[in-house]
Amino acid sequence: MEKFYGVIPPMITPFKENGDVDFDGFVSNIHKWNKDKLTGYLVNGSNSETAYLSEEEKLELVRLTVENAGNGRHIMAGTGLESARETIRFTNTCAKLGVGSVLVLTPCYYTNAMNSGAMIRFFTEVADHSDIPVLIYNVTKFTHVNIKADAISELSRHPNIVGMKDSNGDVPQLATFLRVADPSFQVMTGTFGAWYPALALGTTAIISALANCAPNEIAEVQELYDAGHLERSRDLYQRMFPVNSAVTGDFGISMLKYATTHLGYTGGYVRNPLGDSSPEEQAGLDKVLQKANIL
Image 1 (cartoon, rainbow, N blue to C red):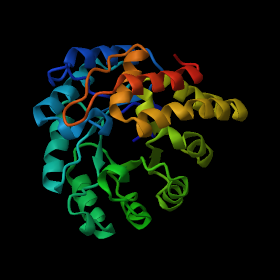
Image 2 (image 1 turned 90 degrees about the horizontal axis):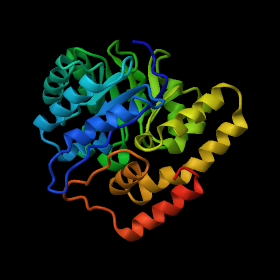
Image 3 (image 1 turned 180 degrees about the vertical axis):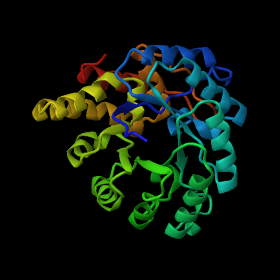
Image 4 (image 1 turned 60 degrees about the vertical axis):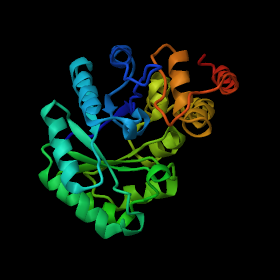
């Protein structure tokens, strides 16, 4: 499989005020993103509020993504469930809908048992029986599981495990994964906070929540870096860094959706038990967006 280059958003799922999925809003976002500097789409990622979606809703979002994505856009679906058996079943259901690859979350319910042996067993079985390429998803702030370098070293040599999204923002760990993995295995950062250092380490793609609302700025950091304009790339990265911190750390998904709406897309509401943003939070984010000169 050809390596990814560029920016992939983990697409938000807009909800109506009554909690229903706003499928029309979701499609309108794809049509707008089709004009942005993106290389593909991740449907049913963490920022999609996937934990709150039914399987029927997830599959409809997959179908709509495949149907509406621009030509040449790679479609990746989050399919990780707690057991290998269910992950394989859901993965291959998504494959039949036209997805190009799957991002599989590290299982985490029995946290203390999720050591390297468990990770190797799980991902090997999933990859052995998946009809499309598999990527590993490591996001410790949600799972409380951090996949180890020895597991990545072994799993990266599986012919159907083609890469990983590491969302921890831990640059030394990212460097370690890059060092121990097979050269064919693509290590991507999952947070804009590590984007400039990741480029310096040789990564070529990012799956970032910030790409929902500021995709072109993220792409420009890479374009400037690859053109040798390192200072301009770093300056843009630094300018956007507080925006990323605000929408992915300080405020969370409700404010990511607010920023997405504010910048011309459809954010919608969050689904209970998440709460929507307050006017005070929105005013705070407005100041961050204005300072970054993107509002």
